[in-house]
Image 1 (cartoon, rainbow, N blue to C red):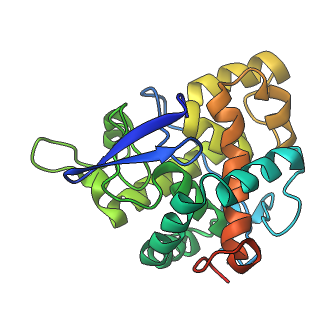
Image 2: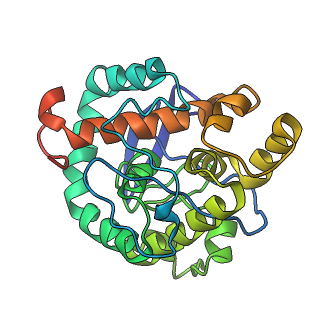
Length: 253
């Protein structure tokens, strides 16, 4: 993200991921944040009173309500082109973690599309570690992990526990949605930090809370990595929903 290539450490092996499919981080300890809401082309079950009753984020459509389709198309081209081998690996890994993550999303009435945030963060590698010391499926930095109830010590690191880290990540995303009122803004905050997004929103729109359309309004004020973050998630979702269309096996079809 910050560089063309970044490295993650998996057990004793070193795995290099291409730009666009490398761990992102929550860059700074921040005040508790609010939640994200989207509905995938499969069927995100809605629990009464849950955030899934809000704006839908549907990868089977243009998804371009707030992002120009060309950016989604650009990442589809990358994932099916120079990053095809890596993306195929992540699709294969998805089978191991999608049932767990989707069951947790269902319990909370959250959109299934958030599954692909984990894909972009770690490539579904629970042992992934970024140069910034973010770790696990959801790439928690230590401060944010501890804030959301994960134990991180010299002997125990629950960031690499798929179930516990998923619970923590979904709580964090829920907080982000409640704070910002939009899944796109929440995803941006997950990537670059909620305090940064809050400052930019106040400067550009006059309010922390907004809509998906506000993501485009503030995008130029965000780091390049964050500007591309939502299109990458959307592109990953579109491919994974119809993998055969793009020449892959696996995925959700």
